[in-house]
Length: 383
Image (cartoon, rainbow, N blue to C red; front, side, top):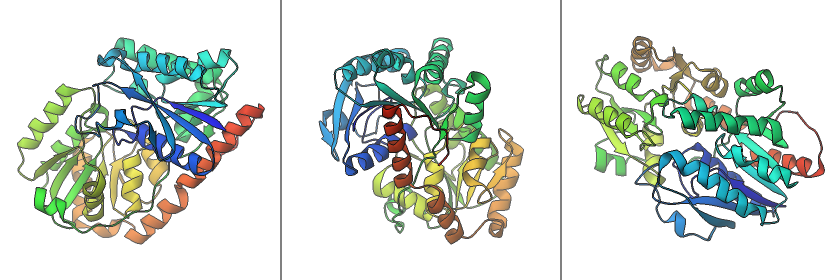
């Protein structure tokens, strides 16, 4: 099959979960013998200034053809312009399927639909709920959601919560296909010891974007309430909300136990996961967080907010605190430090994670959906 990917910022990149999903899926589709073209965004509006800025120079990556789409640096227009231009370019690509990722880019899905090109939409989360978006952006995201529900040949969702949302709001059947994880490579503390003074199992880790819906300020406030020599590491870069990033750094500066690493990837990322005592994700909103899956793939203890998406991901293999509740988070952090036996063993967590979240299964399920869309076969079964 000839497949186009539209909606991510750029690959290769760890700027967000969408980028990781597109890369992992596209790479495996190519290995299966399919032709995949990824439409990268070209411009200076990178979500993280430390991300791989060489990506826009690529023409091919791991067998994936890369097309760089010019788009404005203005954040409010970036996704709109990119999605439109990428879609118009894709109309001339003779693709069997165009796979749109995230609600905003799905707004352009209607164009190939009217030209008879099969389309797949992956809803990575209900993006319009995120605090960073203003009025126009929220309306644009909701419009994209409606386009996906009405016109996509198949809609993929990452949680049963969102699956029920599409059924209730649009009476649209969707396909639940979770994200996946790769086999982990454990690394002893080297870079993290030299650069940040971190020791094995002597720090709590948050790894993700520095955006309001991730609840990082809750975490910093809760951590300040507990008496411990275990450090708190905040790893990740900002996206769209510079005021919020500044607030996070200002809060972190008040506690010498807090370490801010900025954007991380590669060996540094692997070291942080390999050696943390506890991984925590205090989000108010999620789709299916890749970083949480990665933490579990390393067998890490995980303390996360009790939103449906986190609970569905971790089941009984994590501990939970009440969303947005700083006091409860502080209490659960303290309990996690003092009574580690409340968690499953590392091996049990890893075994659960690898059994349930497999990129090869994700790719196989996606490829079957492409074929069904091309053949106009209806299917609403789960993976």
